[in-house]
Length: 245
Image (cartoon, rainbow, N blue to C red; front, top):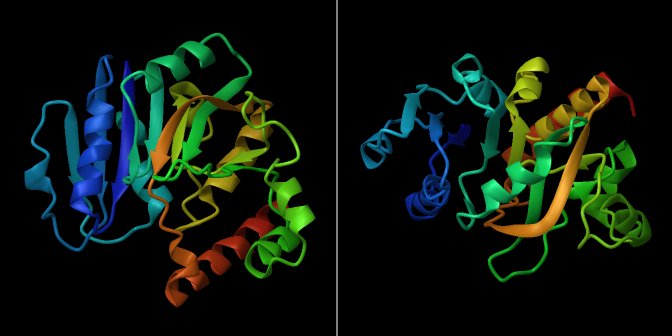
């Protein structure tokens, strides 16, 4: 049994439909939670399906808090944190489940992530430092940027990075519940970096498994919107105050 959750906020319906179809084509017993932070519930009418449970929040409570709304409703072996702009084939989830099932020290697994043009997205990172976040914006040191993204090793082979960006995180449900989901102080951004730290504290690992891949229509909102940039900055400050610089 697998569950998945997608947090919605004024989504592109065409891309969202492809994401939902990707999950529903998975040949396993499953349930999908849609948690809608949008101003209206206009999306609800599009997803009338017995394998989908729709929640209209009525306000934008943030990414982590929205995912945590269904924490007590999850009754599965595996739980997928899924972005609304991800597309994948029906074999991806079964392959990842088979790989992670017997790895007792691994809490979640992520496949290779590519852009629609098939260019690789470097989702694996070292735990972020204050300099790393500045360097990503200002490109002060290309060497440090590549090191931070594990580009100095063969990322076509599975390995255990410190942190994986969270567009597709397939958790063992018991571990996701054990760490009590996301820290709701992170409204948007850095919640995936934070949850990887929480997994460290469990004495567990995360696995990057590039033998299967997904397509992510990455929006990079914080680089395009001043409001989202300040959201990102606020989350970064909270992260470093919690975990240190």
